Image (cartoon, rainbow, N blue to C red):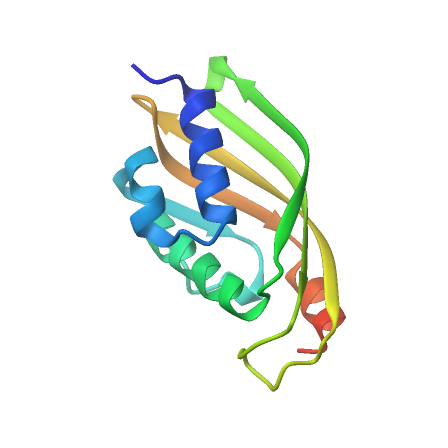
Length: 137
C-alpha cells in the first residue's frame, strides 16, 4: 500500500500544478471533502471542486508556483500537513481584466488520509490578503 506521505505529496504536487480533479483523484477517496475559512472558497465543499478551482486559478495566475516550507506526517492521526507560499501574477482572464499584480500568499494544507488516500483536506489561507495583493478586492 502507498504511504500516507507519498499519497499526500503526489496530491499536493498535482493540485498545485493545476491538474484539476482528473490529475488528483487517484490520491483521494471519491467522496473526499474540503473545508476552509476563506470567503473565496466558501462554497467549495468537496476536494474534487477544490482541485478544479485550483486548475482555474492556474489559468489566471499563469506563472503560479509554490515555495514549499514544510511537509510533515502525523501517523497517529493519519494526517499530513504541507506549508507553503504560493506566488502568482494575474496575467490572464479572471474576475477582472489582468492587473499584472503579484501575490505571495502563505497557506497550509491539512490532509486526513484513510487507506492511503486523502479523505478530507482543510486549507488554512488568508484569502483577503491575497485578493487585495492581486487588485481583486
